[in-house]
Image (cartoon, rainbow, N blue to C red; front, side):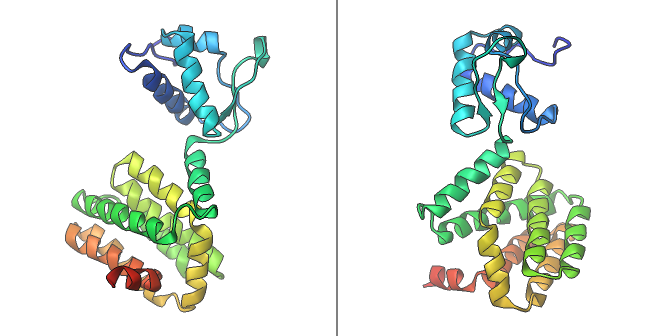
Length: 236
C-alpha cells in the first residue's frame, strides 16, 4: 500500500471492489459531509483500475445519495461526500416507510429476525455488555418518550454491535433510525416503561450469562410487549 492509503484492487469484480474500497476509506479516514474524494483519474491510478470502473462505483454512491459528483480541475475535482453510507441506507428505509411501500409489520418482522440472531451470537460469544448497561442507565433517567427511545435505540444497536457482524449492526442501526417516530409513539401508548426496562434487564442478563436461547426468547418477548398489536396480528 502506498502512503496515500489507497490499495490496488483485484481485477475480478472490479466495480464491486472499487465501491467497497471507497466505502472503507470513508469509514477509516473519518470523512464527513463536505469532504472531497480524489478525482476520478487519480482514484483510477491509485487503485490500478480503469476510469470506467471508478465511474460506475461513484454512480452507485451518487444514486444512494452518499456523494455528489462534480466536474472540475485541481482542488475542485472529485466527488463531494454528502452523507455517510449508513445514513444513506437509513434514508432509503425511511423513504420506503414514508411512501407506505413497507408496512410497519414488515419492518418489525425484519427487526425480530435480525435481533434474535444478534442477541444469540452476542450471548454465545460472551460479548462485552458495557454499552448495553450504559444505555439501560440512560433509559432509567429519561424524562420523555423521545429521550427514552434514544437510549433504547442505543441499547438495541449495541446488541447488534456485540454480535460481531458489521452488516447486521449497520442494518439494525438503519432500521431503528428509520422507525424512530413509530418507536416514540409505541412508548407513549404504553405510558409505563417498567415492563420494557424489565425486558432490557432480561436481555442484558442472558447475554452476560452466555445463554443464547434465553437471549433469543427475551428479544422476542420484548418486541411483543413493545408492539402488541403487531404481534397479535402475527399470531392470528
